[in-house]
Image 1: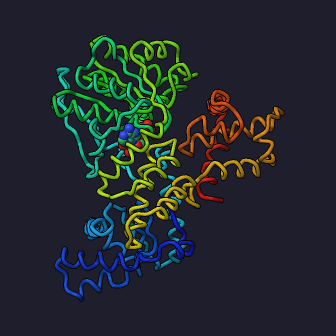
Image 2 (image 1 turned 90 degrees about the horizontal axis):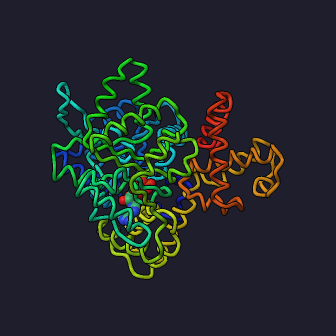
Length: 494
Ligand code: ADP
Ligand code: MG
């Protein structure tokens, strides 16, 4: 995550105070408070750390922290957004029992633990991992006719994830066109199932949401179930534990359309694959549309059952590749426009040339520049762009980076980093290499080919390292514990 230890920011940006002072003026208006009330609740509150997605405030005691948490979070969020031009999460931190720095470290470790591996670097789109959004619950299915409700508990539900907002270029044209076709004419023979695959951050989830939105707008009664592969798996495990597999089955098999984002999560888990296989067949046979996304094509999902693979391959498969320069600049222009910021051409080119692999990083850089420019009271310029690119690409000091993972594994197993990168094949070295690759893949948003470059290997070798570890994980709970422990340690920066 994008975290600045307070002291290291001095040269960069120091104006949290001013921001908070301005925000407080609006807050007072908004709440209609007297000076005395303002002072009572907010007088000692200090904006200590501002990142691109969170504002951490110091509060003098637990009592006030509690009051702010229960009463004023939304108001503070609103006035901060008015000043910054974008929303940040508000996190009050009480210093009654410990120093701000100690508490902050605790909070950040917790936040990191809660984030999911592949969504890790997407603080700007929290709703992607928010299960409660867009879950449609069947409230009456006794006669097999599902009435559905959509719960939209998240206020910032990806309003921007539409077809109109998807910038089309050579690398994503086929995926875009097939998704559009499915949204216009579900369950046509050619596009069922539709299988989209590509590296993280290239727009798969965006397209799946766009399909959902378009269809929901046109056919409000259409029962679309949108689920992440991981959630499907967890829900099934829970249903089996609670002995309610029938309700689970009915829910899924009554869908008019089933969309599973990140289906790769079900590979390797026999009971989940079994259940998914039957769901798939039932829906397919009743002429219902199925849409799947994955970080790899079916042929590379080596732990996928053959019968599922052949079904995944029976419809239309499209990949999404990393955008070329032209598309990157087009996306930049569109995002800048959506964010309401004016970005000079040289800055656009600089960003386009430097941020290559992941569209999510493009957005991150734009928001970062906007915050820097705002805070320094300047128009966006090259110096903001350089800082933003640097931050986004190194993903900030505190975050998990491939370099950190490499050095962690190296010291844990006592194997020099050169050996991990080398072509040496001794068992210990190969094992450390597999684990390094697996951890990078799991903890960092990075395409296989880029991991390959880091380790002097091609992407198929990288994939087989990942699979090697996945296989060991399946058979050895002890190994699983070791890996989980390593993940925990890496995330907490120890
Ligand atoms: P994936 O699911 O493939 O990991 P996402 O769909 O979450 O990627 O996309 C990451 C971010 O990049 C999202 O904010 C999405 O809106 C944006 N994005 C990706 N591709 C495009 C595109 N072609 N046009 C506009 N935005 C895009
Ligand atoms: Mg996704």
